[in-house]
Image 1 (cartoon, rainbow, N blue to C red):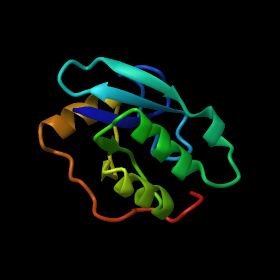
Image 2: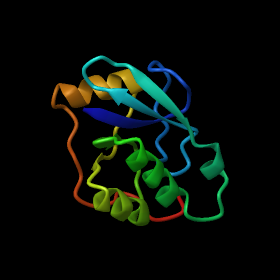
Image 3: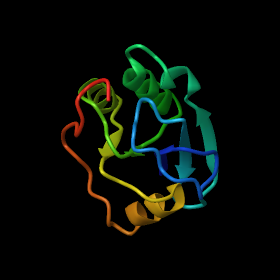
Image 4: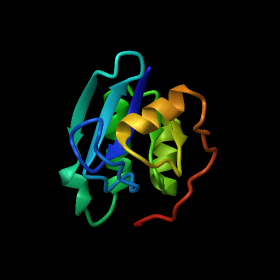
Length: 119
């Protein structure tokens, strides 16, 4: 299973970034091996609009099954839902801790966005 995690840095011990569309980086982590790929989200960090949709598209193109983040707005959530990427919001800690919490069953998936657009 591939898990996308919003991050402030480029490694598993980086703190999560609570913002989805405007996160500095998104790590795509293999839940079994913890091998990961870093996606630079710099293009979306200062985007006027559409940051969440573009980040959601990038995650889908990298075949993530789950997104772990702090806050996900309505347009990004709809895009992720259409791509069949499940979302867990209100997640915090380091990337490594977030993945471990999800694997251990301590992270709940959400059925709706938990932030307004343009956060």
